[in-house]
Length: 293
Image 1: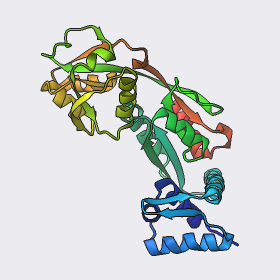
Image 2 (image 1 turned 60 degrees about the vertical axis):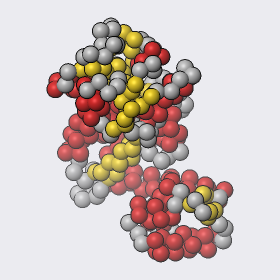
Image 3 (image 1 turned 180 degrees about the horizontal axis):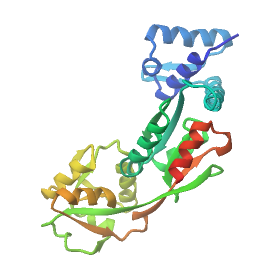
Image 4 (image 1 turned 180 degrees about the vertical axis):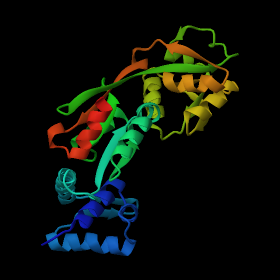
């Protein structure tokens, strides 16, 4: 019985995407080749690993066990490559980083650019998630490093301080709320909104706070970036909740106003989280240390 690393990576891609087609694409394999590899694994183990349906695939109980061990093996492989990278040139390292929307747009780009410049043989996969999802994915071994809100319980994960984040309300200069010094999120929901795309973790986060108030924001338009949102706010299409740093960038070229949000959640401490820092590959530890600094 034998599997190679390609089989294990393929299987994880299939499980995490819920599709053999998507798993094949992520693994850079032809669909026929990917299907044959999965069938070979099931034949060797003499147990089905996936339940196939019209909407995709889901792992069986044996498949979930396989995914757990595959993550462990691949993490150990990456750790070995990272450690050997101290002595051998050309070995490539890989980091899987999860973060919320504000961290990705406001804090990480310059830091990651500096790290990648210093580590030319390392690549980083960055994905946006809700803070609660980040904790579970780190625990499950689906990622190496997470950036999330300190208010979320990290369980037994190791954490390190990262940054402080403030949300503000952005309005046009002629909006009724523009002259206010502060406003509650509940009050803002009486007005039209401009927001990010519906699949954005930040929009899901704001939607959750609105739902707890028994309300729902009325989005007139959804866009992909804060600068585009700022343009719509400037034209009085609606108001927007955004990180204070993003709002300040918009104010450099746009005639908009910012109003403090009085809700406690509008100011958040961000933290880094990992499973066990000392067990991480060298290149991942160096990234965490750079982010902490």
